[in-house]
Image 1 (cartoon, one colour):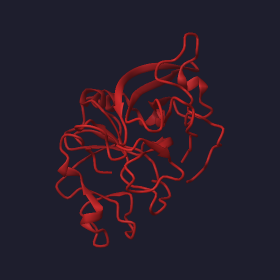
Image 2 (cartoon, one colour; image 1 turned 135 degrees about the vertical axis):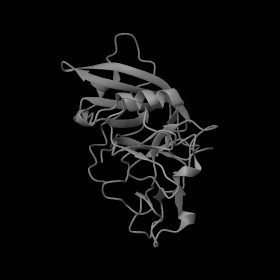
Image 3 (cartoon, one colour; image 1 turned 30 degrees about the horizontal axis):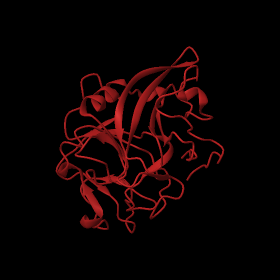
Image 4 (cartoon, one colour; image 1 turned 45 degrees about the horizontal axis):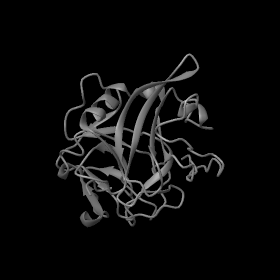
Length: 234
């Protein structure tokens, strides 16, 4: 999804119903989620409402059976807010809500020292295919496949600042649904709201990559503070 400006539906009752600032005595967000992905690391990206373009990103570690906050940063969402990941449509500039895996990291810059997460360096021929007619739909491609039109793909090297460091969000990734959307990442901030990704300041992105461990099976949960958005797990 150009930066700048289902496998399983868990349940309509599973709500990411927590505002970035919680009430006194209220348990932290991971304790109030019915599903955190089963790993020992979790990222939560929470907006106040579905129409919001900003919010808070927090990353958590599970230690001794409990969740401990490891870091937090201001977050930006799609220019048109958030949309249910199960029904979202491509090209709407909305960030899909839900609970997703993080297949791998990539970047135009080298991986930050200490990074152990799978990391792909962006080259001049690195693309993300968003062509619904291509067999490479919603996949990294290097070079661009013959059946993926350049006008329906994103040349990752064209965004050296935003894609200095990024994590692929597993939205519509395992079993892609054509027209649902492609190229949703957690990446470095641009000038404003995104085209559907989640973005954070550059230093926060570097901290996230140093923190993330494949052995801990991290997931990202994207939702709203008003409880209006059900969490969809893929």
